[in-house]
Length: 342
Image 1: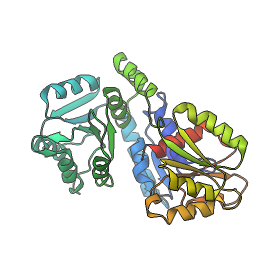
Image 2 (image 1 turned 180 degrees about the vertical axis):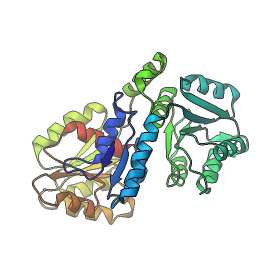
Image 3 (image 1 turned 135 degrees about the vertical axis):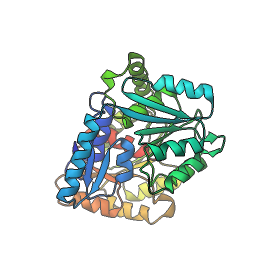
Image 4 (image 1 turned 90 degrees about the horizontal axis):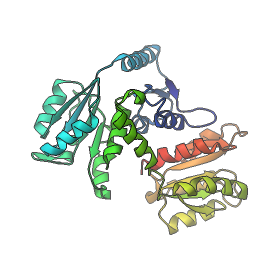
């Protein structure tokens, strides 16, 4: 699939997330082509590559060749970096399947030697290693421009602290980094980056993947601010988001939205554009002037009838957009995309 991000009715990131969430389509390679700079999040969602428009004929042809190569290649290669011998063996048992070559090592030195000598589709690492930390390994990888490194899944049995997440983000511009705290989540992330056909996996792995999706907690416990003055839309969105574990804060105009942001910690903002007193565009511009909110994800709820509405939203500070009337499945997908970044 060649996928544009700037689609007229919904963000291509939502389409990508839904393709990669569906067991029937998640193995299909997707190459993103877009005028928007969304490389990092697209690759984290499972895209095999990203082209910035305008793209030349030669670069498009190269993207198509990459898609074909990914589809046609049967054998995948996985690198596991874990110093605990027993856990390393358990990870191999958890992830083993046909057409997957697993190389397991216990030190940074061994990992760098393997990465320099061969190409891997994915790497799983712990943050505690005998000859340094997982951060040291990521730093050495990020500083080596001569080698193309695979997506990295940090597997740890406990939640990362905010400081640890910030340290990981320092390397995420050059390496795709995801986290996994349970065996089923680890299996889910590995199969995503290996572009595995789920129906061809061993039955116990398919069962674990179903379990992982039941426990998908991307939205559970998140606080989302909905800035919307239409009571019908508030009811419709709250009836969808609250059963998923979302705590919804409501603002009836842009000024109320700014007040709510000052009062509580918010993971994501859903901003209607047409509101009284202060509209959504003015509110987003005001939000982006505040340092503490510069990285806060904002999804604009746009009126399809307004010409250039989408671009106005992006220029005002929105990260993404969805056109009214709102398709709730698409909206939930977009919420997952941007909450997973927090």
